[in-house]
Length: 473
Ligand code: NAD
Image (cartoon, rainbow, N blue to C red; front, side):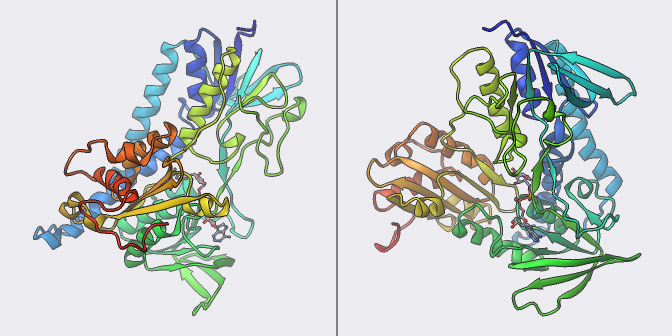
């Protein structure tokens, strides 16, 4: 190990706190700087965790409504927003408090405040409580994350929300326009729909959840279209006028009947951008790409050898689990261990109902790259478990190399897809062949059998689904 023992980590999200904890576990002297009371970052305070707590409530509300089909009827739900917020906040408090405790146990020094880099391997921290600190370091990890994009067209108004304010659930707007049909728009749109809002989504491109294969998105879109008020594809907001009791918008899109509309609230979820400005990077040799991401090598080392960068600020995909993975790589590289960022599969999960998850190579990418693959699809109507749940709206799909029979990618849409994708990630990472999945005994009756049966389809038929000869390929 080099002599460098003082490590400062700027940013305390899933990248930053993981890096700080790993470094401390290896005996380094670590200072972690974050802006909240405890480590956690956007993910725990205003992202993954509070949104999943609310999505859990949404699931309960939806299932209670749907139970009528099975002869179980509940009355209309009474929603106490203050209590709901309290519960969500308690989830956040419990997890972030736990991280604070884990940091103290590891003797990670946690500073709450804003960090900016100084010319001589030092960070000036403007502490939230009003004080100042100067921290000298040998090595630094930049893990400052990202923030929501808010195009200038959207004025500041309590009626115009970003993902952070939308999580506050100040009220349940009767009508909500969600701008952006990606992860956040679809997840938070689902929460508001379940709570009773009439939700419209406008998406600038021709499809929801860009990035996922269209056959998987189609399953999700079918259900969302049935539940949400409207999904407007190839449509953009071109004017926004907040008023006392509504917000007026002008839309531009293909075959749009009414371009001028009124909503109670808007949620803008059109992507995130890296937090690389205002950090004092000009005092370092750290360089950025054209999108503001910090340039890093396979060890997550920047163009200035004293600095590593991980997580959203270091490039796509902007996912918490990618950040935590990079944290391990960066710390191992600091310790002089052989480590490189080289994942074969990073799971992506949209926590809608149904969930949409994929990893590794997509069918779309396989086509673009001219890969010789066979696609096998197992529809959930053929899954006993899906039928018992009353949720046959699902599809499990394998993208397999025709020559060596290796599973290169997997896509799953259906309830619980976010959990099911874990097996697929392991299969792709370990270079599993279709036969490995086919010959692994999966518990019956579970949705995980759909992974095994889609592998069986690679070789012909599976017991519960008969494939017409033209399918696949
Ligand atoms: P996103 O990139 O997932 O989706 C943004 C969508 O907005 C895209 O479909 C894009 O085409 C559309 N869009 C862009 N400009 C538009 C415009 N002017 N009008 C209408 N549509 C427009 O971004 P997001 O939903 O804001 O989420 C940001 C990031 O946060 C994601 O990329 C993801 O990495 C992360 N995230 C992940 C999860 C998860 O893992 N479950 C959940 C939330 C957020």
